[in-house]
Amino acid sequence: AFNLSKKLIKCKHRHLVFTIPSELRSFFRKDRSLLNILFQAVSQTILSWFASQNKKECFTPGFVSTLHTFGRDLKWNPHIHTLISEGAAGNITPWRSIKYFNFTFLRRAFQKVLLEKLSAHLDVSFKKLKNSLYKKYPDGFYVRAKPDLNSPKIVIKYISRYLGRPVIATSRIDDYDRRFVIFHYTRHEDHKTIYEC
Image (cartoon, rainbow, N blue to C red; front, side, top):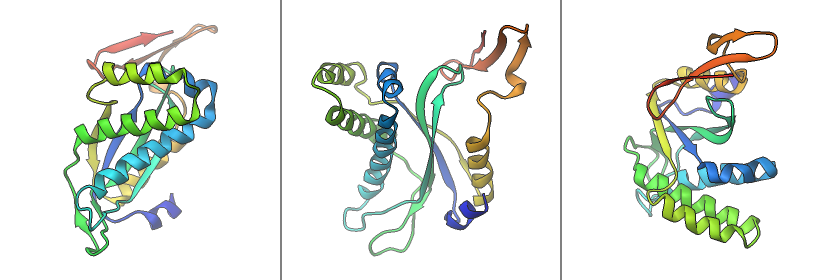
């Protein structure tokens, strides 16, 4: 955490989560090296969004990304959590505050970059799935924002917790009968509490 504090830009940060549809999860499970492509797609998407703000300036933000390979239900669900500075350095301007994030752009760009990169690594049969995903998800892959994090200290605490936390918090474990663990989680879509065994 101390080394990270030296590298963070002292400004507000935005927390974004880049997710993939269920149709793609098995590819990443079979070949874990594809997880690098997930990081590359997120990075390219973020950099292209900031650069699009002014092509001459080509603004570059600071960001830190972490991988989670499971969802709240503990099933295989690789997704990327990213903390992005609410501002960026340009070729001419030393720093510009950028608080607006265009989620339409981010979702569609993330979808395009990820599918193109996967296409380059997988065999020709992936092309059919790729085309069907563009039709099924015309607005792109889901990218959501969490509330901004004010100071670098809060950002460091948050990132450290994410990197070092166990798969499930003990507060979510409801019962254990020496054979099964029963736990709960809150579903993002409808905020409903779900119980799993």
